[in-house]
Image 1: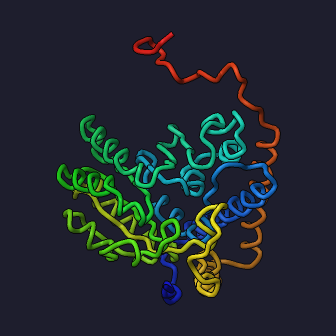
Image 2 (image 1 turned 60 degrees about the vertical axis):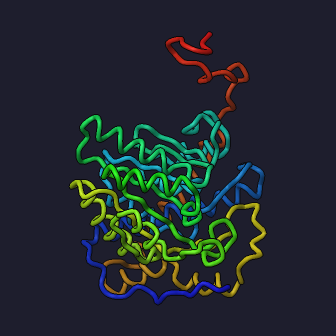
Image 3 (image 1 turned 90 degrees about the vertical axis):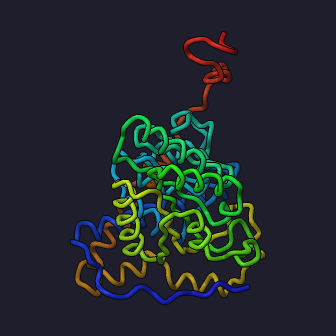
Length: 340
């Protein structure tokens, strides 16, 4: 079963040069970090599971720049790009993937469990759909504590919409009109099964709309479209309009994970989708509009490469957590059940 390739984005970019170049730099930073991560995985420097975001960069770049610093972000196991653009230093991300204690989770979580309370990034979650109830809980807590304009943005794949956690979460969010922005990154194949083969209702907006959510469907390969959709939806949620569901139709250029033999889709299909790559299509639009020169683009690439090199050096120089810390964080700090 082949996934049709949508036409490339067209029209002028409606942004000042500073924002346009920042969106491009965001995508390039993610791409360079992910490509290096794949290389390091092949060298045995990064182990365990590794899910790359190559091809999907426009979703994180557009959506995260639409959020405020006070908003909460909950992500999936394909969350490196979200963590980076949310403000987590690439050093901390790379060290975590190396398993070093200088990582954001002291090397205990690895690729799938990036977490940073300082930037309000509440995971990285290895369970499909596992972040959805967490997002609803965060939004409920904000409601109860009077954080009126704070929004919780929850990112998840279309495969999560077949999970019970999705239905329970959107039902409660709609029933209680909680400030949740549900961001579905629909890359068409979940782990390895085409959407039409796994969902009796492949119209994801119809499924979410059945619970009373406001919905929007957007081209997830176009960073302008993702930014505008997320910005408008976030504004509505923050004003108390209740939860929103945005479907970002995107496509991953690499396999589901580094363990995936990728036998479920044709190479020709992947090649066709690569012609819609969010970085080079946005670059072409910016150049055509006179907002970007080739030298500026090369400067963005060099800056990203240098940042990646520093992050790798930081991770290489990192240290392993001492064995005597094995029981750290297993007991409460102030006593209670199980405390020493």
